[in-house]
Length: 78
Image 1: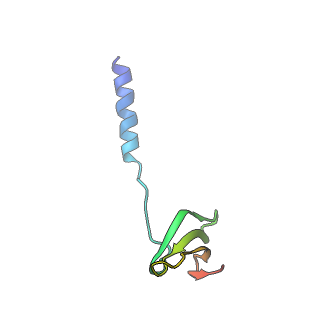
Image 2: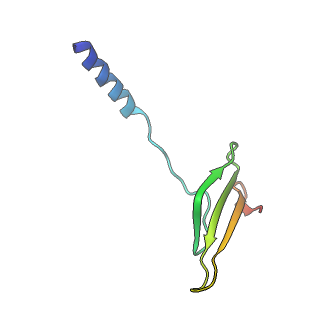
């Protein structure tokens, strides 16, 4: 019984010592642009693709767009 509680304490201690997620801003959206669903970063970390909706005037249809960004230059590729 003591062994089981010691094992739980060791496991809990090792989990607490691991660093948590780290967040950083990689790209700024246009004013009034909202990301729809999910954004994806390429496996090499150099490109970002996302679907978004750009708000239009009241009563006018909204525009939907997909954007591909080169994260090394912050330029829109598509």
